[in-house]
Structure formats: structure tokens, C-alpha cells
Length: 173
Image (cartoon, rainbow, N blue to C red; front, side, top):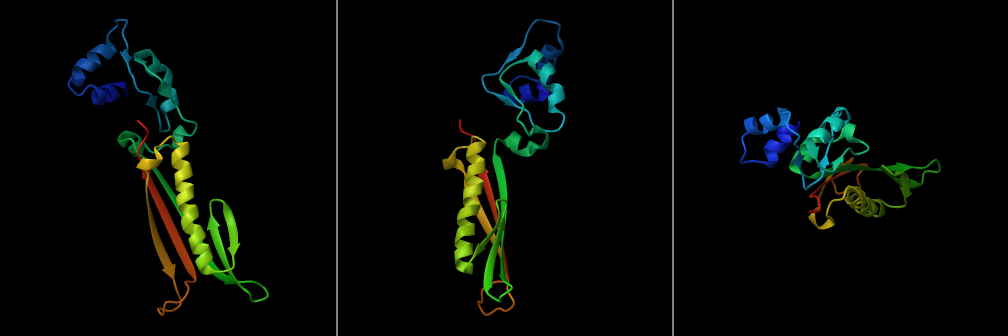
């Protein structure tokens, strides 16, 4: 793990030379000026060994065992949020629009009202996640896709709408 990290950082030094330093019995360490964030299932087992070889701020996030290794390598944060809107009727045959999100179920009086709220909520949930992860708000891009299920093609209100928000952000430097 250290060999890969140091080879990435020290692009002008051959991996064989870095490996010689790592395996030597000399009293030396690699000093990192940037934090090293460990993610993935087995990283807790490597932490102490890394501290012997690296003089760095080594961070193991709370949920490191489920981290996205690809996102960590490229230095991006990725968040996906799904929101479902369903048109239905109450017991007294009154039209209801239900919205399902990670925050639970909410009821609206009209489809346009639910859709407007869903678009705002999806972007808000992605942005909250990104800022909590320490990503720069100005560097977050959010894309939304929408899939409607309608009973007819004549521009009626959909029976169901699925909104998917994907946010990609760069860390603060």
C-alpha cells in the first residue's frame, strides 16, 4: 500500500528505489505534507504499519469499510439521491401526491408542488452530503434525470416520477 502511494506521489522515483527504502532497516520514514485518507474494508489492519513508514496525518473515516475506492483515487466525492413521486387517491377518493425520499414520506396537494419540492430537496440532500464531506460547494456539479410513468401520452400528470440526482465534487485544496 505504501509503495503504491509513494510511487504515485514521487513520480520521478522508480518503484524499485522506493521499495528499497521501505524494506531497509534504516531509521527513516516518508513525510507527507497532505493527509492520507484510508478507505475500504481492510484499512484498519494497515493503520499501525503505515504509521511506522509514513510520517503523515493518517485518517480512517468512520465508515471507511464502505468507502468508494475509485472516488478516493481520483479525489472526487460522489453522491446519488433518488426521490419517487406517486399520484394516488385517499380513502375518500381525494387525489394525493406522495413523495418518498431518504427523509421519509411527504404528502402534497398537487403534482407540480411535489415536483418543485423534489427538485429542491434532491439538490439540497446532495449538497449537504458534499459539504459534510469537506468538498467545495463551488466545485460540486449536480445532474438530475427524470423518468415519468403515465397512463396516456397526452401530456397528463404522470402516475409516477422517479428523480435521480448525482452530485460530483472536488475536495477543497
